[in-house]
Length: 153
Image (cartoon, rainbow, N blue to C red; front, side, top):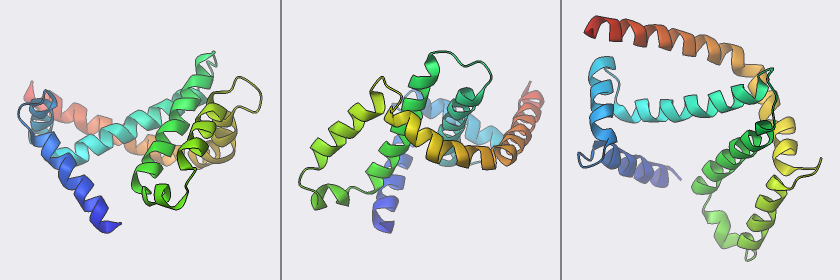
């Protein structure tokens, strides 16, 4: 597992530093201004996007996008877990069929919608328990980014 994680990290580092990619210059600039490695900036950005999606679900403005936003949050969490647990595929001969049924269950338009069930029973309680600390940290980071960008202007 540690070796696989290191391989992913190395591949991601190569991609983030590939000057032929459009994000390389943006991440390079952010890396210079913040003093943080671009890998951590990228991972932090992904984490912020995931967090803000959960935050949008919990907002008081509940429209029909809640179901789909919930689906994408659950799908993303499942995809991350699945990526690091690829050995599971070898253990279960019907894995792809089970995964297909699971994905349909996540989207099914009923009260027993899988994404809503997983969100309400697993993701939401964890989010509610920790969102205060995360919000405070994000606000501090935002203040630091504002200070850095004000200095460069």
